[in-house]
Image 1 (spheres, rainbow, N blue to C red):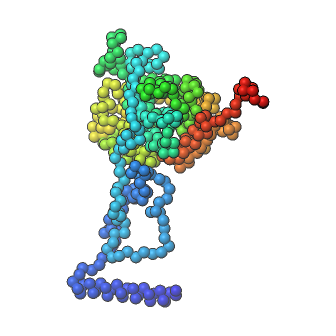
Image 2 (spheres, rainbow, N blue to C red):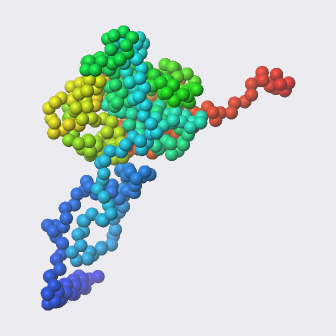
Image 3 (tube, one colour):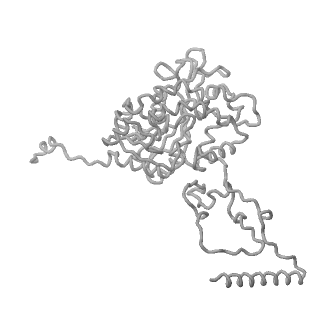
Length: 460
């Protein structure tokens, strides 16, 4: 098209628009207004984020970093009808919800497993304290495996809630046991009665010092497994896959290396923790904690912060796990919870009454103990081994050599953050189910022994 013809076409369009404008005024109708930047509704990009994604099973939307329909471009030009708000929110699309999702969506029951403290129990204050473990459980069906999880520092058993649902979609007979570590979630250590043999807790008594050493946490996890077996009246332990994230990875490795689970242990999976990288990260941990909000006005605000800060990149996971991390100040001031939150739940700042259950800064004396020697123990412990990372840069020299020698399975999810299992529960579940199938001894068909064949009179 030549410049002259283009100019003529534009002139004709202007004339048609002018006639329509004059005609409407002659009929007594108000002139049609062309929308401008000042008359259009305000566009909030954050509110529009991910709203085109379809709902997940159960009706809860999953976050996804991939492109959506909103990013599709067109080479054609669409002329809107007069007065149409170009950037108005389409009807039928609700704003992103930050309502908490109850744990009952993912687990069949919660357990409160009480063990009186005593010598060798791992409780730091010996017989002067008792511990009540809290765990979420979906029981295995038949001879199905039991995935036993352990969360990272500052988290809770709900960190694995969405993942548990994804695992059971692919392995319906699997069970999941997800406990809260001591000092986290709803697991409590309380001061016992000073009267010998009475066995009753003294209300208002100060809790004993919190022991979060690696050996204690590994003993706790083993105890939870045994107490769960007793509570559920299982004749024997089902085949077990241990799964630990961050600190939890060090805990499951410690338990696997001890061989206390015997032949019940099929293997263990460690999520995004490597000794060298973890030790380097500890140097800046206090700086991170000082910049983190000390509290939130509502529980929804806490969930929203985790999503907006991309601490957890999946809003459904955040809506499920964050309620296990926060509690009202008045609840944290109960004697049995003061041990968890000492230094966090003060009486000031009532405008933000939702506080962290676990004071991570107070756990600093245990940080080095958690991760020193982790790579060596991971490679030496018995059972199948799998390492899931958010980037290959996290591998240290020892693990790099071990991976080249085929000592463990390695999967990398570069699109995930530190909370791999919460950011990408579906991909993590696929990896774990495949890991179980490769280590499932019930599928092995061994040839008969030579001695048995000879006893049957058969030639060898």
